Image (cartoon, rainbow, N blue to C red; front, side, top):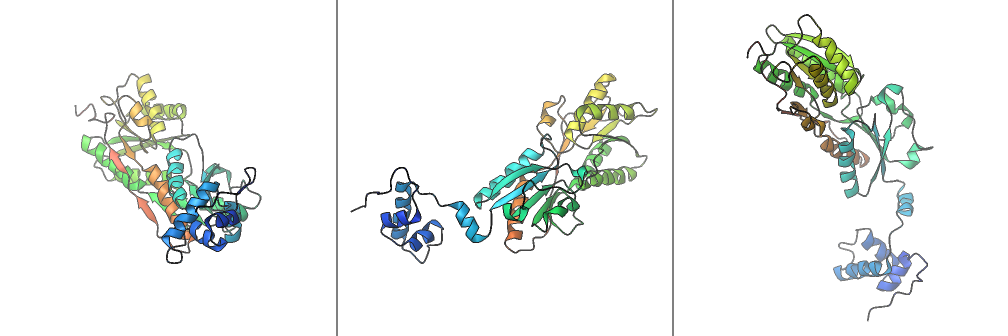
Length: 339
């Protein structure tokens, strides 16, 4: 006959209480609730332990377990900003994979241009097991004292494990698309941010345009924002022989290019083609919808977390590269001279 639970309503049930309720030893409770019972405990006994734990409302003391294992099962996700729409999906992907393995993820903002990052914890090695650093330089983690780290969308030349995007291929795809439409005078509205991802985009675009017969590239830099991008695009369009297409380093910059074109009475794409990069929600909110390169931000976070787990398990993970995808929409067309 099943035992009646004898735990006082005001106390928190313990593994000893579960053992008493199920009629087994505490070590058996630990095996079953720790998922290590297969081959050591019968399925009927395991089922009885789980049912007893459920009746008592027992929950394992995760903090005590972590203390025994010498881990915190917590990962720090470092990003340069939380205002850019790109980083939300990165966090979502990392949390999705972390949860399946019993890890938590704490987001922390550290702008990439402010030098080595300070930890939000007094003793990082006691508070976190590892770091995911998105769009940051490797040396920004110098103060974390060797904490295992995976760099996301960062310079692959460093010694850290990395998961990145094929941003150079994405930029070359944009250049090829514009060249096929007939564009030769191309303006680059570039992010004035010293990050590997933007340097790689600039180098790839410059190389692609240099390879076009009669190709001419002009560049204007700006902070990532609509108003700075509008001003930068306006400078390019004020040239004596202005570009017929503007290639923007991200979709928010492209929104500023739209505003610059409209202020000058130019139609997109009849008078000016515009492209973006990232394919965030803004890309389809613009009118016409934006031709851009889709970067799988959520998959970046998921793959980064998977690589970090491999690293924490003693592995030596290889660099992973996630391809971008050119998404052609209504913001690009042939230049007016060809029309």
